[in-house]
Length: 145
Image (cartoon, rainbow, N blue to C red; front, side):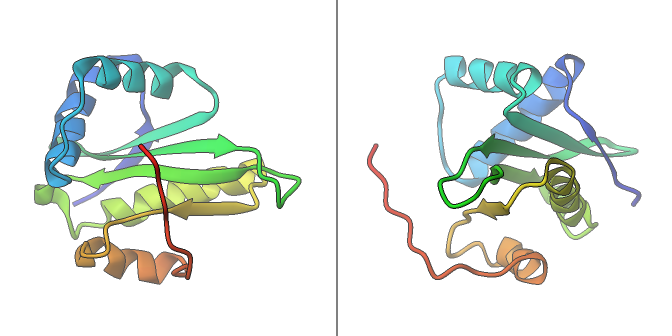
């Protein structure tokens, strides 16, 4: 299966929403439709965001979303890889790796000091890929919602 990585655009909304729902279902999460609407708008219009789709002959099979932001420990930006999803049917075909490699290429182009992301501790399939492409941090995340 050949995987093409390409930019997300306004015409991709229907296909993106199918993938987005799959991603939210995977994490057993529900979001208000207004949040989804605003997320798509930002991904298409806001230069701080980077969004790419993975596409095969069967259509869109995944996405990656990143946020670029200033850092206090660097003169150049950091990149937070916020969302990465590949549909069940396309897992294992290299789409996840290609999406991360596209992020790395963009970060190199922008001279980012760091790319970082989170995943659930039990997501062993994803962690197997991430262990090949990045270094596991010793830091623990805390949050307030």
